[in-house]
Each structure stands twice: as structure tokens, then as C-alpha cells.
Length: 228
Image 1: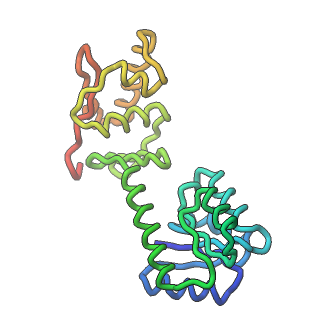
Image 2: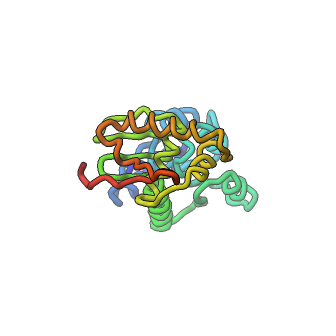
Image 3: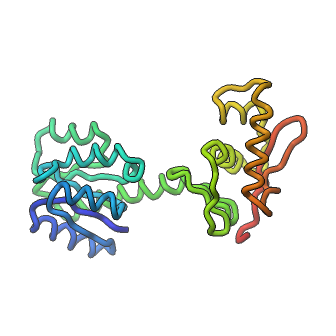
């Protein structure tokens, strides 16, 4: 776990980094807002501990920039700042920050809050990974891979495959699949659905058989053996 501390007070940043590393986590630091955002974008840490009052770019601006990019939007943030007034705490939390700790703080309490955030983030990330044998879909990034090699899927193909994989062995009605893909279902969409399935099978190659046709009804996913 890599945690980035964006804090202009170097003594506080060093204290936080020391305690994080005692817990077995990796810590890096930035002491200025623009530098902090650049590091967030380039390293994509597992958590950002973010001061609000920063030179160059304040913490709230950094947070808004993070949430405006799909590459950094899912990174959890804990605000660490001397601003103890209620309205300032609410400003960060209303933006969606994961937690808020005011200075002076207890390192022990801070580590507990960090651990809780990382536990929640890991649980959420696990739910975003769909896996069957060597076929893996990441719903957060829309990245798909098979036997370690990337699969070049369209958004519709990814959505269809993920939906079927999350319901292994259960036949999915054609009209339900049309609604998942197109937002509505009617007879004019039947051929479009079949075309998506055909192209998806072609991309799956020798594993195309995991998408099974239930004649007259729809399709279902046949789970792949572990290790395949």
C-alpha cells in the first residue's frame, strides 16, 4: 500500500510518514499543492492524506481535480488540517472525502482511520473485479484480460460479458440483456444483441464456449475452470 501525504509542514509530514511505515505501508510526501496533484496523477497512490491549506493549490482544489479524472476519482482521501471549524470539516466531507482529522492529532487515531479507509477501499475494489478462471474484468477501469493478455472489448461487449459473468449458469432472457445494453428492449434489437455476442465470442477465441446460447430464451455464462 502506497500512501501519499500532501502537507506543507515538513515536520508533520515526516511524523505521519514515520507512523505509516511502522504499520508496514509505504509513504511518500509532497509539500506543495501542485506538486501533490502531479504525484497523485503519476503514481496513483492507494490513499492520499491531504492538508487543506497548501501553497500553490489548496486541498479542496486538489480533491476536485482528482474526482474530475477517471484515473484518480476512486482514490480515497483523508483530510488532515488545522482547520477545526465545523464549516471547514463539512466542506471536505460534502465533497465526498472519506474522513477528516484535525491538528493536533493522535498518531494512533490517525493510523486507525487510515486502516479503516483502506479496508473499505479494498472491499469495494474486490467487488469491482469479476473473475472466472483466467478471465478477469475490472469494472472500475473497464479493463479485461484473458490468461494475462488484454482483451480489446467495446463498452457494450464489456457490459454484456460482466453481466453474464456475475450470474454464472443462469440463463438471461434476451429482452433483459437488451435492456442492459440499450436501455430498452424490442424486437428490432434482437439482431444487435446477437451481433454483440458473436463479436464477443470471436474475441474470446478458444474460450468462446463460456457464452452459451439457450435457444429461444437468451444466453448464459458457463464458468471457466480455476487456473484455466
